[in-house]
Length: 126
Image (cartoon, rainbow, N blue to C red; front, top):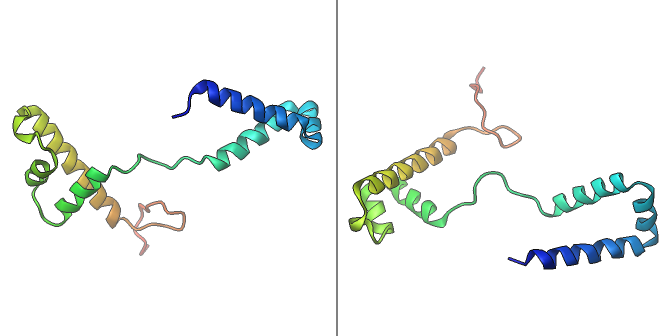
């Protein structure tokens, strides 16, 4: 991850170069608040965040194994090398988390989606 100081320096250089441009310089001097809003909107469009959590490849693999019919304890034993040394409560929490993740993925795979990609809650036959 780049250092904060370097990011600040690059941003300052970018703003200075915008002010040197005749078109942008006039816009900055005339309406700083409006120009800043336009600039932030353009930056957000280039650095879009995705909704939700980032996918975890280990969790994806574990849920696939559960979906194929392998039991939760077997999947956890195969994915966590130190499984036998874990205390019972930690094992319980790991199993509970995997069960919930697998159920959540199963639930989301069954819900019909509307045009916007959101799951519908109403019965489509009505």
